[in-house]
Amino acid sequence: MFNEVLHTIPQVLIDGLTLGAVYAVIAIGYTMVYGILELINFAHGEIFMSGAFIGTAILLVLTGIGWVSSLPAIVMLIAVLLITAVLTGFLGMGIERVAYRPLRNAPRLIPLITAIGISFLLQDIVRFIAELKKGNYIVTGPSLFTHQLSIKASSVSSIFNDATIKTSFVIVLVTAVIMMIGLDLFVNRTKWGMAMRAVAQDRETASLMTINVNKVISITFFIGSALGGATGVLFAVQYGTIDPYIGFILGLKAFTAAVLGGIGNIRGAMFGGLLLGLLEMFASANLTLLSHGIFGAEYKDVFAFIILILVLLFKPEGLFGKPVTEKV
Amino acid sequence: MLQLNNVETFYGGIQALKGIDVAVEKGEIVTLIGSNGAGKSTTLKSISGLTKVKAGTIFYNGTDISNKPAHETTLLGIAHVPEGRRIFPRLTVKENLLMGAFSVKSKQVIEERMQQVFHYFPKLKGRLEQKGGTMSGGEQQMLAIGRALMMKPDLLMLDEPSMGLAPIIVEQIFEIIKELNDEGITILLVEQNAYQALQIADRGYVIQTGEIKLKGNGHELITNDEVREAYLA
Ligand SMILES: Nc1ncnc2c1ncn2[C@@H]1O[C@H](COP(=O)(O)OP(=O)(O)OP(=O)(O)O)[C@@H](O)[C@H]1O
Ligand SMILES: [Mg+2]
Image (cartoon, rainbow over all chains, first blue to last red; front, top):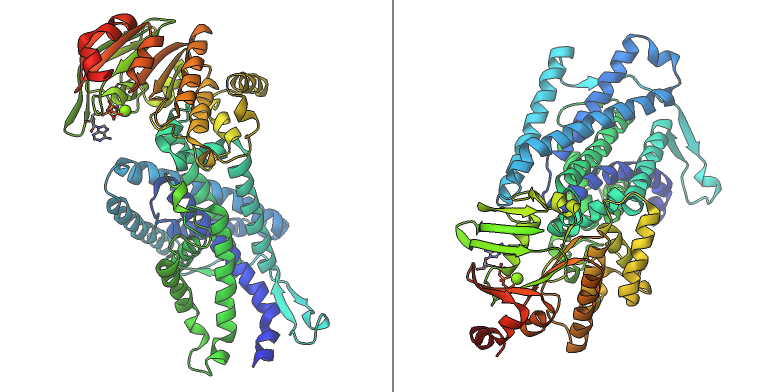
């Protein structure tokens, strides 16, 4: 049995890292907003979903006018990613301005419920528009990348099976990693990134440093939502078919990843996402085998939420949570 | 330079300031003394804009700054070193100082100001990469004042800089406050440590449950019987 598990490792690594990278980038959005407002922005999953729809809509329009076949797919993708990121960035920023800012000093439960309300609203708006335009809320976009690569893991060691990887997976992984590195540099190396950390640590004192706290919060929402929306595009490219409810489960899992890495901690969220993706893919590939057929691969989702519950029970500050003493 | 006229400030239903008049002239050291909960910190917060003013006016160099948000009053040259230092715990000492110069674009100016801060607080120079939260109380106070100096303020408001510090450190901090004042920075100093504050102050106000109880120059207040009894015993 052990050998059979080993056989699957190369494929689990590839699929797990790709899925994990998607979780990681979305988790960043949850963790950034939590870090600065102590708000769990449940609408973030729907920002991701909106990004998937906006990206697909752009691709469909461009296909209609014949651009998709005439331009290299990678150029198309970059253009769509950028446009979608900007649009979802403004969407997230707008939501904060309209729905969360007026509740800044309200008891914490109130903005939380508002966030859930915004989630439903976005699902319904997207569903309405999709049905209006396509007659169906389940939408399939054009495929940009259809190649497959084969990785000869068996030539490294005969224990491993060969793994296959779709070009789209490589693109998703690479783009997600670029986004994570970019964000990390922004937060740790730039003046506004520093301001963002200062506001997260002590909002009042940050305002005494001539920092416009509202502006920093807007920027935070913009960046988190832009990353989330761009990840939505990646998801659409990877899986082809999307619906207005994809943000729910994926959002919950990304949130789990954020909690796993210590909510509020950006690098923790990245790591939590990758780890969760790997665990989930491992479970999906091996659950049947390991449980002698009692649990099928469909239990992989349960797996993610068991992790969430275990973390909340035993290590609520997450794997990389900031020690309580620093939270003065 | 700074005039508070009949300022009233509330926290929810609680009235913390009940019509306060305070004036600070350019180049002065003015101190606010009073017991716990008297409204000293609230006075500073009302000036810098951390709390909303319900009634009355605050003028700074002729402009009405009542209810201007903190990020705007600080741009006008008012630096507020809050009670309890409020260092950013997970930023390094260097990053904390850079935050003070957030509105400054020029790298060269930032570098010059940093050197001035090291002139007053040489100890910070060797600690640039240390996280603010791991500094000792005295070091944090120096960092908090240094961070405010990075703004090159005209008016420096200090809220209990001596709180929780060993006498010898308090001595140093008061020395530096005098030095800064000699350099031309106007000082508004809130202190529990009334005796030392009145010794370096040009003038002082005694505040009690949200009202100005007494005012006068430093010497007058030190020798005033009421003050002696209540704050210098
Ligand atoms: N955030 C707040 N919410 C409610 N009440 C407050 C708040 N901050 C201060 N107060 C109240 O306002 C009054 C004045 O407080 P303030 O902090 O200005 O006093 P202080 O003179 O600075 O006292 P201390 O010497 O203890 O620092 C007190 O009664 C205090 O309880
Ligand atoms: Mg106080």
